Image (tube, rainbow, N blue to C red; front, side, top):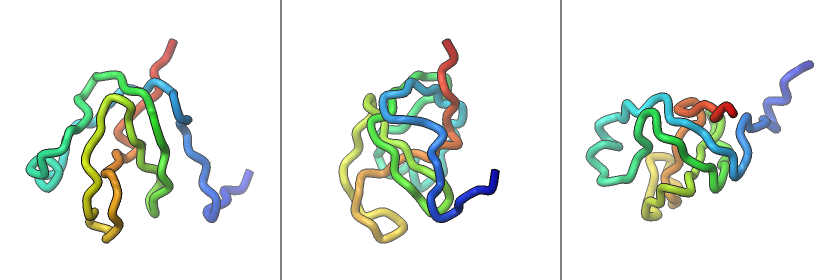
Length: 89
């Protein structure tokens, strides 16, 4: 099956439980006074946002203020999907 790069498909869905597997945050994030996921902790997806490199996840358990992002967009910072894995039953 050929990948449609104009319409990527998220590998997660809203409401799905996920576990953080990469909590190594860049200095910019660590010093921005943001709430960030902890390695090994379980979260639930409240929103999925398309990004140029994949998808960003907003988590039900974490809420950060809306701010001007490095992309120039004004929004709540999201977390790269690659930092998470699905919770297996």
